[in-house]
Image 1 (cartoon, rainbow, N blue to C red):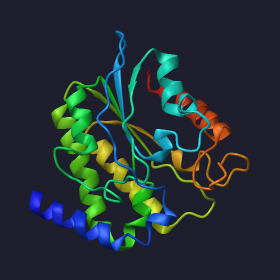
Image 2: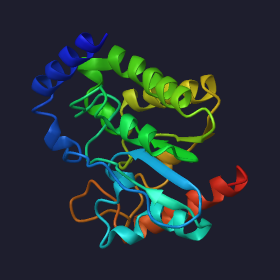
Image 3: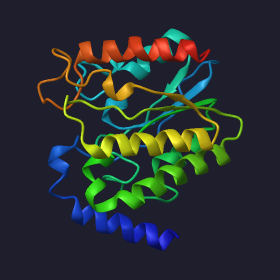
Image 4: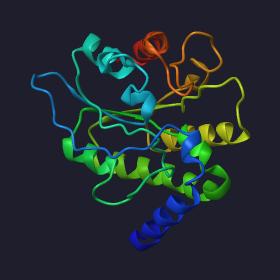
Length: 224
């Protein structure tokens, strides 16, 4: 299985070179530390929309605002351009799920899937399988953690057919592994004026502020 996934990673790295310019730029994650304090440890497994790319300061990203408001200790190793498969160099013990498991967090957010739309034509089957594999791996390794899976974010009024399919896979996996699920996030900023940074790919401060308000509402409804 590990050999198959390593081969898949190498294949996708070559096949997706032309696509990387269409998606948020990939970067390598670093192992995060846990902030001091006694609040719940909350880990975020996501891409640039959770990392806060496009904001004038990382403190304005939705994850940090949500964590500060609730007294959570945020650990956010999210990576630009990352998907369940897209731009993912590893499926082994040094990937983001492994980093999150090592933290033993109390709550885990999964906000992945946007970038997999750029891989869908060459890796649809692998994307579906990896969504399940990641959720199974995380929930099995962290049986006492609460999981919040968010519908994949999106950013343009045009919605590729792959988006609805990936959304369905993410939601099904969340249900299968007993995670809370937040629907509707693909519509939160997509196509709305004044919410995107100059690169046209990422939210600006106003975009993240709207995401924060909508995420706060959704989490309040979940009792978080």
